Image 1 (cartoon, rainbow, N blue to C red):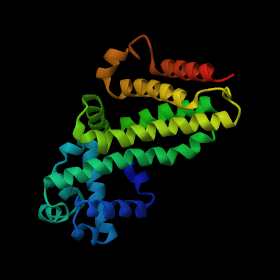
Image 2: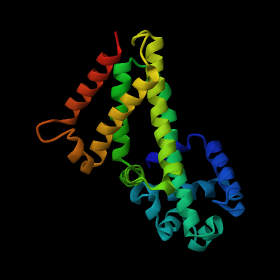
Image 3: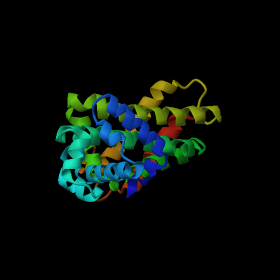
Image 4: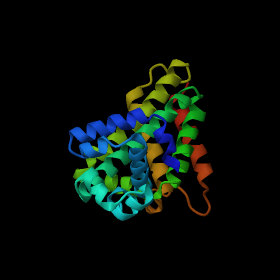
Length: 235
């Protein structure tokens, strides 16, 4: 299960559960479960969300995965809508936490290597989470106001922040021009990376962006993108 990395710090998950309880997303009954049972249920929800997308979670399949009765899930989340809200918000946390996990490793790399690793790693990660990626893409590209605040904005902020930090680290190492408008450059680089990455993960976007085709392999485009960025903002 790819999301195992997400559970590196269960205390963080528990803090999220406490927050959700205060907001009425989960019940006190769920919060008071023993950690192993909580973890089994959370993993079952995430597995289902990753495969199908958070808004297509099947409660019976979640119950089967977690080894609990369907009725128990309703004691933990009140209703189907509550469980879907939990799945949606936890899925967004899964993605933002993944960025936080990899950023320290990328910051220590030369910018060219860091950008390539970030782009390639993001696409490889996304290839294993088809349902989740498609859900996030629908939320981002259709402009659903109900998901803009809880899903799109946290993920968008996390992606922009990681690019800003990579550029800032490179500038401190003397790789970039000292007069570079770091904030503006970060936004431009972030947008370019998203266009390339999303065109790979969502083929219908590739029809518009024309990133790859039979004569243009992805690796060649990635090399060109990284070279364009590094040459454009370095000495």
